[in-house]
Structures are given as structure tokens and as C-alpha cells.
Length: 288
Image (cartoon, rainbow, N blue to C red; front, side, top):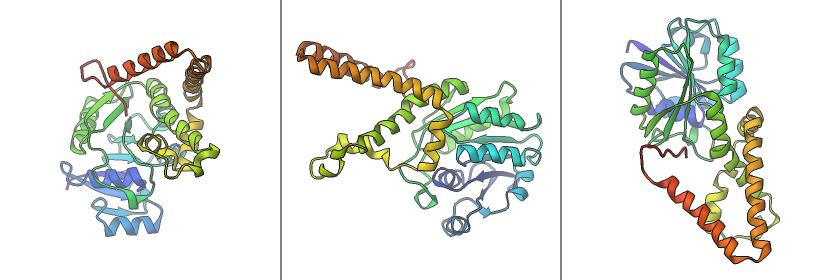
């Protein structure tokens, strides 16, 4: 193999990425982590082609570096290793926020390219023991290139997305990404944990159906990760939550009024919007 992809951080997403990328073109996939138990598990289960704890030895040789750390871990890693990345190489990430990450990448020298990346995939679990190579099948891969990002590297990311099984590649700005993800992802997690704060939670066993299980599935989240995601994207998330509160209040008012015609009209309006969202078409894209 003549080229190297370094996957930094072998948790759920990093481990899955290292598994999914094995055999990609002529790249050797090198997994990097500071945890000895994680490295041992990765080596025993074929996560990547090889693994190491020495990021400083891999980074200068890597043609592509994929940062699979928590958001603040990514910003610290970029600062620490900013002068060690291989000139002409590509650095990317898998973080669920983009504005803060793209700003942190400004420390890189001009000869090192950075393309923000966010695969829309995951589970409610964390850790390499839950990683699997099919993680990204049928998912969207979002890219936020810089103005200086090369077409060669953008094309490489598109081939990578196709290889790991992504449904498509969506290019956008960091700001638009964060505004949309505040609604499609972060707000959904807030709803899930809020439902689990209700006193009824432990009295509902035997009564919960698929709608309850689906709504609360992501509530068993990685606390450290989601604390960072919520706090580092707070302006966009607060805007989304303000809209949600308005919509909930409108439904509460309709129910409290006893006006079944008004309630029916509201339900029909909301249901119609959901059905339209699910329709296939060139102008309709769902970021699950």
C-alpha cells in the first residue's frame, strides 16, 4: 500500500470508519487511540490494517487524517499537531458541529487542506465494542469544504463516501449545517431526554409502544459528547428550541380549547408536511 489514512479516535464512529474503509483504493488504514484496551480490542477485531497509540508518528506520513474525537478533542488535536501534518495532505473530521471545527482548522498551514465532514449515522451506544463496518450504509455524508479546498480532495471524499456505502454527499456551509442539525439531530435528543425526565417514565413498563421507544431511543446518549455538541452549537439550538416551544404551545392551546375542528386542522397540516417530506424527488432531501 502506497498511501495512508489515519483514523484518530477509535470510538463508535472512528472504529466503524476504520472498519468500513478497509480495502479502500490503495490506502493503509491506521487506527490511532490513547486507550490501551481500545487498541487491544481494535487489533483483535481487525479494526483498520494496524493500530497505534503514537499519533505523532502517523500524522507526518498520513495522506488523509480523519479526526473522530469529541468536538473539543478535535480542536485541541488540531492545535497540538498543526505543524506535523503532511504537506499536501487532507485533514477531515466526523463531528456533528461544523462552524467551531472549521474555525479551529484555521490553525493549519496553507499547504494542508481541511474539509469538514459529518456522516449522518450513529447509534445510542458508544465505544469501539459497538463499532460495525456497515454503520454508514444508506446515510447522508455532509461536506463543508473551505474555499481553498482542492477538487482533488473533494473528489476523494466523494469516493470515500461511496465506498463506505453512503446514500449521497451533501455540500453546504458550516453555518447552514449547524442550523439544520440543531433541528434534525440535537433538538431530537433534547426531546428524548426531556421525555425521560417525566415522573411517569418508570411506571410505563408494559404500556410503551414503538412510538415511545422510537422517541426515547437516543436518550441513552454519550453525556460528554452531547454536552459539547449542545453547548458549542447553542445559538442555533436555542433558536430551534424556541420554535419547538411555540409549536407545542399551539397544540396545547388547541387541545385545551376543546375545538376539535381546530385540532383536526392542525393535525392535518402537520401530517401533510411530514408526508411531503417523505416524498421522493430531486428537490426533497431528508437529513435523518
